[in-house]
Image: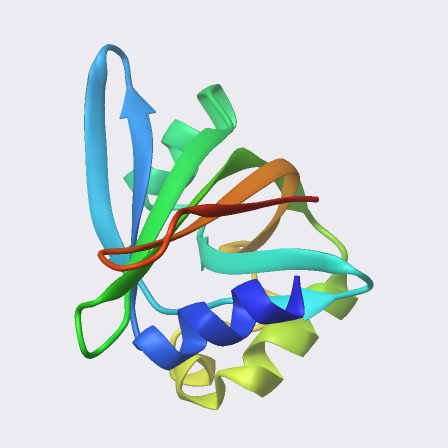
Length: 132
């Protein structure tokens, strides 16, 4: 899991795909952290992405490294964690978000991956899959 988090962080951004009815929706994200042995992301409950995840938690993210020769696909189910502690952890890791979010507001949302499969891909190496 640490390798997955580090790869995504080194990419700087990733794209998260959700489902809205029968339409795919993809948008850039930048938060990724490990807390209590789970891989978390952060968003706002008021955003459409949050509403989509609450209806269907199955998502996929994709991140490509800066030299564009390796990428990662991560599929799994996102589960909301309303506890204060993971929110604090995420906001400490991404202090620039503190101007928009607080661990005590009604909007801040952290979600962790459950039943996840990460596939590391490359143009020159065979894919490698990790499940957690």
